[in-house]
Length: 146
Image (cartoon, rainbow, N blue to C red):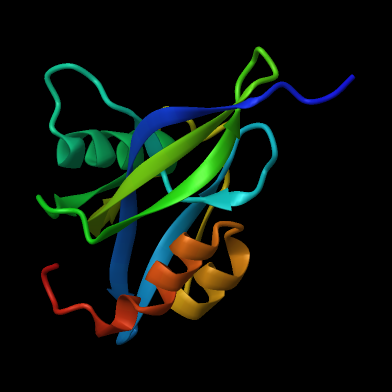
């Protein structure tokens, strides 16, 4: 049976959790629940939350990361999300840096996901989306406080 067609139009927002650890920029990635691949914490828009607020909420829920989120996206990437119906949805994901100030020991999705710090280059090697990998490779060039 052939795959169902690709739909377009999904808009999500992601946090890019970053911190300086031992003088080096580090990126916090989480595993997805189903495929266990490394991803950024992300989610669908929610009424009453700005895109930046939504990104910060997802960082808390999926990674237990708390900190200051930038109000402007630094870029975006696209990926194909498989829906429960079997259809694939082409999603555009706006990326908001979140400067991690605290990592919680327990968080809402702690038993569903792993989290791990990577250098930006290592993080770029772990993700599947080429646009996201390119964004991660440029991360050390971002001005502080972005």
